[in-house]
Image (cartoon, rainbow, N blue to C red; front, side, top):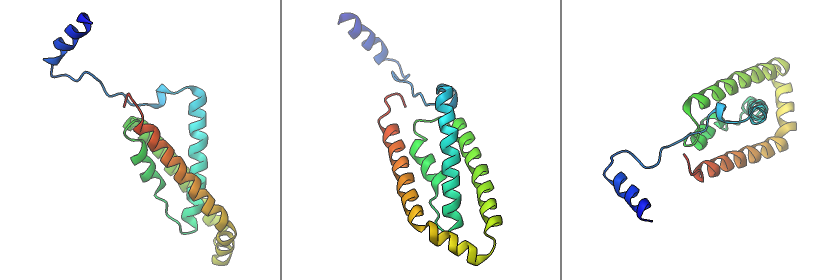
Length: 140
């Protein structure tokens, strides 16, 4: 105990923090976890593109960034956001090409309405879970 107290007192005079903030990065997760991340990014881009195409703006990228930025390095966030934006743009272009006719678009969006509500609920839950995990992070 005396050694611990002495170390504590020695550091008490330091102006440097006793704890150093550490954030997750793409390099700090396993290959399997990265594969799962990219699968989810693709899935989220698909769903967000469909929601956007049908007139529902979830601001998914902004909300996700706000949820995980306390515990994820900015360079990793930027890379994931870039991939997400590119994939979403591809999917929106595909929807616009396949359903250029306003009646076809309306038919698609109307038929997807129950699924869109469910997708929104799932995405909201995932963002909430990510925020909770970052809030509980002891190293961030």
